[in-house]
Amino acid sequence: SENATFEQIGDILRRHESFVILSHVRPDGDAIGSQIALGFALEAAGKRVRLINEDGLPDNLTFLPGSHRIEVPPADPVDAEVAIALDTATKPRLGDATLHAASGADIWINIDHHISNPRYGDINLIDSTSPATGQILYDLITALDLPFPDETRDAIYVAVSTDTGSFQYPNTTAKTYEMGADLIRRGLDVGKINELTYDSHPFRRVELMRALLNTLQLSDNGIVAHWDLRDDTRRKLALFPEDSEGLIDIIRAIRGVQVAVFFEELPDGKIRVSMRSKDRAIDVCKIALEFGGGGHALAAGIRMAGPLEDAKPKVLAAIHRAVEASARS
Ligand code: 5GP
Ligand code: MN
Ligand code: MN
Image (cartoon, rainbow, N blue to C red; front, side, top):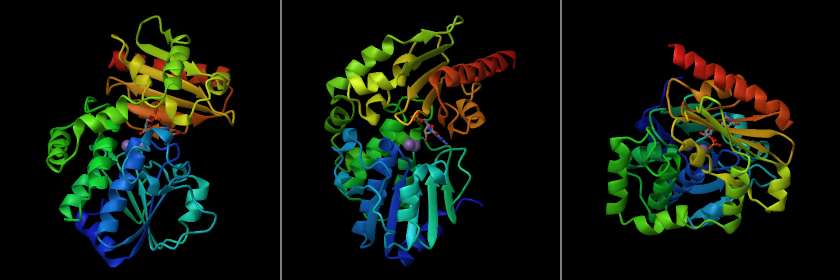
């Protein structure tokens, strides 16, 4: 189905009173930030709102005003007419318990910026040119003239900042900076929010960095860098799932590296793969799709069967094939 217009979405928002707002498992700043941003705007407009995430609120985002409203899915379906999935590339990535909690909704709205999103909503707004779902919501909320409380302001900033690597990745547009300027005019404290987002890490995250650096491998041609996190390291350092968020940027930043890969053994034995590319000709979303994952051309991920010894060579071989294909074209 085609993208809905802001007005069509506005009609649905106006005509209904109760909403359940969702985002993907292992939520990042864009997922949680988007839920808070839209949730508080709708609540300020007089609506009833629940914010549900399969894995709850990660520790590194508790500083966000309004984040206490993020709940893990209750056992019974919530009373909501409309479900809104944010920043979630496929419906199963919402999680089983979350899907059950939202199962009473009559209408599904799907707002996202993943190019691989199959448009699973009744109403879809998928903009793969937007660097973050938070930026789509900024456009929506301002276009519809919805209330813009401080929680919405701060949450949108963090959503967009975390998905653009602090306004650095090539997905950052002039509109992104104009939006940033507007958020500052609305009273956002840039220094404070950046300190809370980027300069307030628990010590164990730096210990994780040390452990990861010990596993770092660079391909002979210097184009692919990867490292891995084993379950024993996770247990030894008592890591939280979000502790590894963004660390892949350290190896992405190596001169000459075009693709960075992070392999992570999950407690359930599955392997999580994170990939970053510096070159659109090496589309890591395409590689992720080969293994049932997804994402964007320059940032994508997979959850696949283990063990690590099997997953790693398969994914690395696919990456090297993509690197060679891009060199030939
Ligand atoms: P990250 O590497 O930061 O976890 O994810 C990078 C991008 O890929 C994100 O936009 C994320 O939504 C997407 N992604 C990560 N893991 C998966 C996955 O297992 N399946 C799908 N479909 N997308 C993923
Ligand atoms: Mn996300
Ligand atoms: Mn996102």
